[in-house]
Length: 136
Image (cartoon, rainbow, N blue to C red; front, side, top):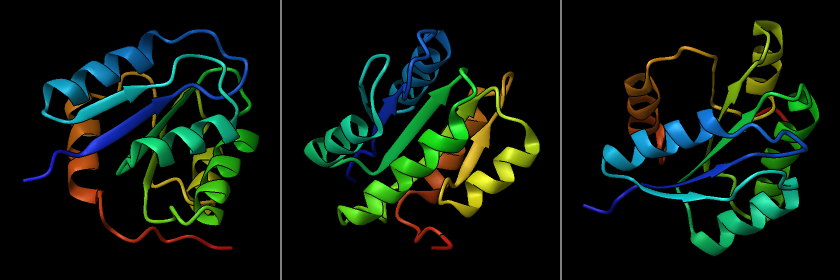
């Protein structure tokens, strides 16, 4: 069985990456191949890395408050580049009402602080390969 390949990325100017690294390690420990982009990446950097690495999923982590701009930009660019089937999940400090809007923009799930790591692993395992429900 093919391993799930996941790109973990930190879009924008956010420099705090502990949570992203903890999630990356949990995914790796669950048997996934994990590529970590490092901090302060543009949506274009993230999508290019997703294409180059031929990933099944992209995990975006943000604490800076720019999620309503950066996350939809990533999902839009993935669709534009023919990667609309890539599962996109997000995490960080994201208000519930924003999470609903992000889901409409193509983010499959948003995980807040304190989410059990097995919840994230299980979601990715169960949803990779499913067609995202995206408006627009």
